[in-house]
Length: 87
Image (cartoon, helix red, strand yellow):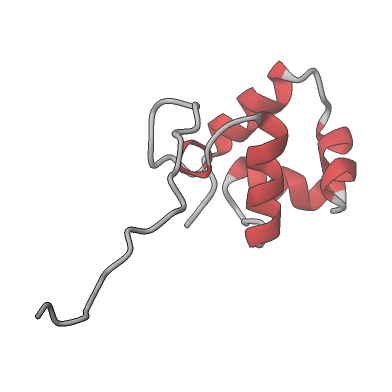
């Protein structure tokens, strides 16, 4: 999945960061971060997670799967299934 270049740039600018500063925070060279913003490359999963956490948005928003930046609550508890026969 390709990054949304416009969103990355907008989010970075909202934080008042340069591309060089954002690259340093991610641990990549500035050229690589510039590729992310232009949609010419994409970070590994850890990079996506870092960006979403850093910018305070959902992964779906970051990659263009949702229009709202907010994170939706996730219930990580799965329902318990009972396969025992009833007598």
